[in-house]
Image (cartoon, rainbow, N blue to C red):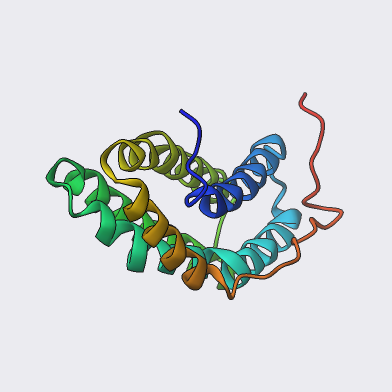
Length: 164
């Protein structure tokens, strides 16, 4: 199903996050010497985009989804994912991630995004009227207005590497 225009800003942010997950996956195994650079980049991503993205979802998207009883368990899972992902970002800020927790974070983030895209967004597009989606889109636009308009460039250490 094509993505409704009102959900596209979230989907674009999801694409950037998935690219980060691919880079982390391709960097395996991550040398201890490279962990600081990765954690610094994660901290930057959280401050400039993820924190605002999560907040917009929690203040606009999830309340809209909770109007549909079938979606309540999924939304509860997604809220729990946000809490766990925030904890991972806190670990990155504290520079306490390891060569094992960093790839586990990327796997969790990727699975979370796919759950939102493939389950939540698809169901909302089926259940919500065009007018409701437009209202949701306006709320999301307001919630996302403070995200950075420039992308975070990977460092020499965190750039995409060819798959082995």
